[in-house]
Length: 145
Image (cartoon, rainbow, N blue to C red):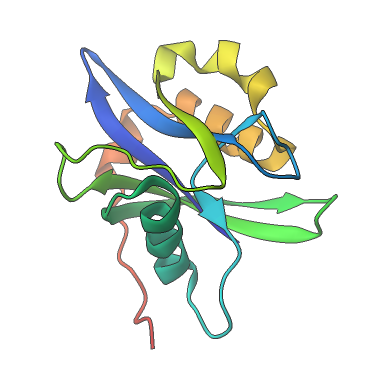
């Protein structure tokens, strides 16, 4: 699977987009824009597609932040930092979500218990703990073919 930590400035902080799940598993809890890869699809293309489908936003991937295993689903998820190609574009959720929220890095600890999946809560917590080194790491996508 692939997931996106979609960032935007939030005053003197950075916020990420969370979506409230309207489908099982995890209905009512929060999650990153994420989903399974289509046959033959790369992690990068899946991350971009899922964000477009679930949040209505086109994104540019910045870096791979980690790979996380979800034991209940026996899934491996590649998680990417990203930014919207149009910072002014509104979020347009699809049927899989009932709401969205931009959550500042400093507020992440209070949100972690609301996250639907342990692997994604870990990815979000890892992102929230990152220091200034992250900005020096640049993501170079693989050739999607």
